[in-house]
Length: 160
Image 1: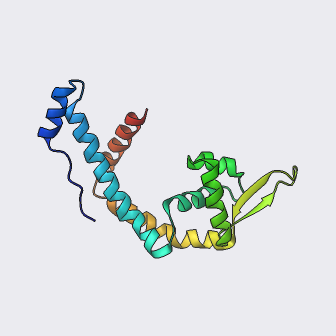
Image 2: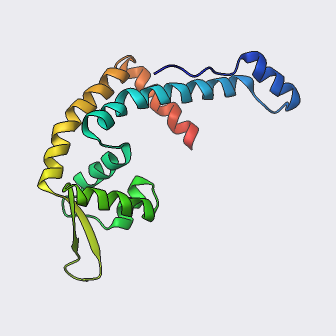
Image 3: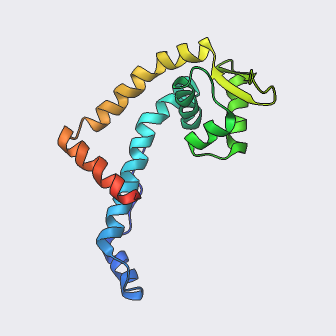
């Protein structure tokens, strides 16, 4: 995958002359961060798409379900995955269709619905996660442990 061309400093400085509140180093930093994020995303997640036909969203939902062997309500899964209920509904239907998850009624309240991974889903995750974590480790292994801690601290600061 090729890199996208980022705006030059001159282009950013020209915009800053029109809008003095623009902080050119901040814009450059964020653009570089987004480009790196995009490249990392593709280097790690493209393998899942190509080799396993598994989207990032489906993998996230499966990982959430892996942590709750007793199952979760679709609304809880949506909240944990930070997606809408409509989106989670489609994802869950596909996981169920593919035999990776199943739905069942709440034992106390038959109206409540829960979803859990099937054995096939658990085996599938056990198969793909070590390679996924290895690819992640190789990307992040370019940083020292201290640099990784600093990066985590800085990312948390940005989103606060």
